[in-house]
Structures are given as structure tokens and as C-alpha cells.
Length: 91
Image (cartoon, rainbow, N blue to C red; front, side, top):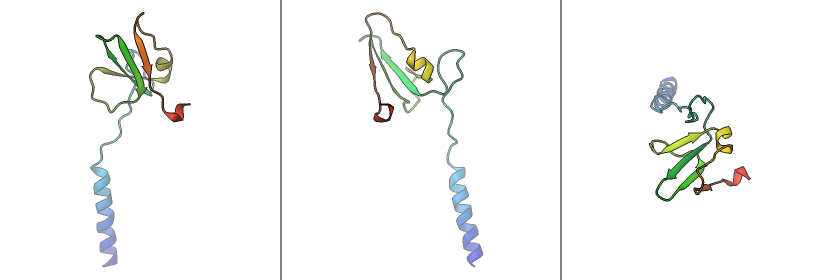
């Protein structure tokens, strides 16, 4: 009886793990870059403003994921404001 309960418990745990989607690696949006993304860039043309922060939830067609190198090299057109959101861990 104990063995049957253990098998059921194991099956329940395995079943729960099977239902979880595997984590997809998010790559940099820059053409030709295959590095892992570390930040998300969003922008507003009307306000000439860009925001750069931690990886967003995803699914926003107006957001672009960037790797560490492209995050550091980010430049915007003259007159634009860039808001960089930093977490305490980045300090």
C-alpha cells in the first residue's frame, strides 16, 4: 500500500512538471546577435522617449530585448530622452 501511494505521489509530481512550459531563452533583438537578452527597450515616438529596464514580461510587439553589450552601447536620436531603470542588484 505504501508503495502504491509513493507511485501515485511520484506520478502526480511528474505530471505537474510535465504541464509547465519549458523556459525559452530570450535573445537580443539586434540583427545578427545571438547573445542572451538582459534588458528590454521600449519607446514612445510622440514623446521622443525611450525606457530601458529589466527584461519585460514579453509579448509586447513594441518592446525589444537587448543583450548586455547592446544595452551598454544604446544610443538614441538627438533630442530623445533615455530613462534607464536599474535594480538595486545592479548598483
